[in-house]
Length: 353
Image (cartoon, rainbow, N blue to C red; front, side, top):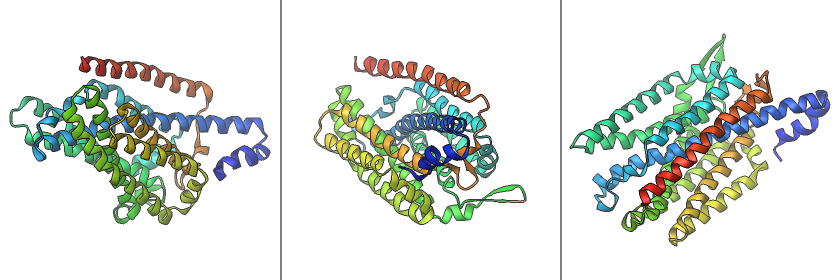
């Protein structure tokens, strides 16, 4: 068990008047769990959308395979409106329950944040122009490439949470950009973010095209999924190795939840096996989702108690209304998940017909 979780359950109970302290810590943990779920949902759906743009360009103008023409139509833009709300819920919830994050992340990530906003706007405009113009090669290239640059830029948020990239002097928070740029760990996370987007998206496209009965396209996207499965696992190993050199505390804490990472590896090999043997495409994609779910929560649990090492921990929790505020956050998420699931199901059924 994670050393910090042991500390909460055993030591904090005795030192801080038992039930009251344990109740507060439970609210903090459940809050982070819900926020982490929202971030996971956003990452998965956004990865599918981002990757589709890349494969649409690659399939049409690089490999020039007729089977993958109009690949970008595999994703319904209406889903993005709900997906982005999960990211907004994560950010608003994080700032609302842990207000110190606004001071540190807000100041440190102002430039990367501006870059992300610009990339999103460029991507949106490229998509509109791609739909309207006849000569679409350039616009589709911009649409696809920005879909990889955005997750790469967003990954900086997770990178700096490990500590060592932010300095606070005289009440001024400063991002050590040069240190971030030269860090092997930083680049390993960027690499993982990009190849994960491509592996998740390719796995979805293989499942989607098979379900639609498009055998030629499903074979092509199956090749994409198998190809990107290799750098995906390599990038994961690279992140673990570089994390040991950057933040030994987090690395050792990760060993306490080794079983989550072991499950992730099992799901990974299960997904690759099913894709390779052309069996049960839906189960293969489910294994991909579970692979990233277990790894994502293994990373998050082992990162506790830090939200931003060493400045912010979950003891910075400011939810005065406790469970009431948490229940409201959860209800909003459920109200979004239900129509989102129905929309996805209807989308698949309609296009299959």
